[in-house]
Length: 128
Image (cartoon, rainbow, N blue to C red; front, side, top):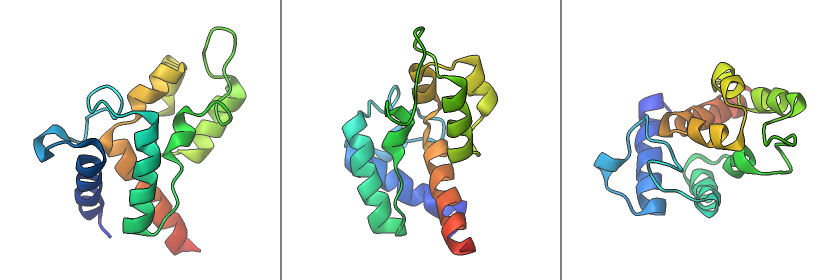
């Protein structure tokens, strides 16, 4: 499946999950801020991806306290930043280091990033 095909499927899934029109879902659209998605919507999106692509994605790990540990200032610990980079190597770690808050992570979650997650997962599955 090409990246463009993944994008079309992701766009349709986001439209279905969030009740949006196609012109509202662009590659740079941020899931939480621009599309007004919520954490529960990430779970629904995970189910959609499993149905469409046959892969089990844990989008909610991006904002889950058990996966991402923060310090007293609310920023990711170095161990969490490394875990994040290992889990999502296609995301810009420099952007994360510039704003290591959970809010900064939410800003990184664009439609393009979601497509990259699916693309990465499909490549990993096909490599096995």
